[in-house]
Image 1 (tube, rainbow, N blue to C red):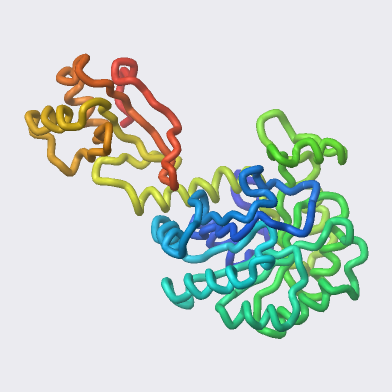
Image 2 (cartoon, rainbow, N blue to C red; image 1 turned 180 degrees about the vertical axis):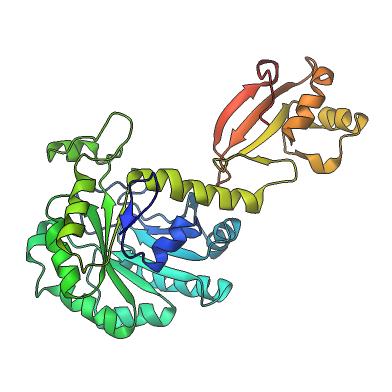
Length: 355
């Protein structure tokens, strides 16, 4: 058994898609929010749930260029295709796989999550398009009676066409039945720590689940259920992904990877993968005139329609010249689509720099 230090995750086998995720090198392609299921634990947001929308990470997708732009922004080495139920939009899935393989080459790893049981024909089409790995998500209501059903047939067909095959489900009581099936059919099992979200919290509470503590969103007992399965099934290829690992490692690594790709000359990349810089707000022509007068190099600032962004140390150096003519502050944002601002510190309240 191997442990992810400080994260609570553990595994004795790590699928290729998960290795990329650990490195922050996997893009998440949310093909559609439409789904034929209504899993009580589904964490999909209201923005996406049962809506026919597509996102590449946080970026809304309206064209193939949006997908490629997002992949390039993080130098993605692979893509996880998810939903909703992505196979409700099979032609879109096939098109995106071909798009990614053509743009980034055959080594760009693709894996698909599905709550359906695709036929041999569909699986062959997915494999021919370039899909590398498939992860099945059986209906929780059927976990104790999966043997001999459509899922088993689909699993075996997926193996025959050449896909890497696994099952991925949340970890809680009853997952042992799924583990037994995975062991019997020699496929991997991914267990995700069950988490409270805005869309599933009421349903989880109604099913008797409680939070592990007041600080996080993990469900009490989820990790223990996964440990119990690992102890009882020593021959099973298993990976347990904790809530802390997703937030503290996977997300941070992706942010750092993206930040290093898109950072401007004057952006400082923080240890958390956010970008830190200065802002001067006002008449852009007047601001640039001041910067030119002060001999600030043009590669240390950038103009937008109504403000100028510049190195935080530049803003610090010229603070006395800014005076009351312009509003100014230090800003920290995510390097993702939309550049969501994390914090704004007014220049006169900053005190010391972020160095």
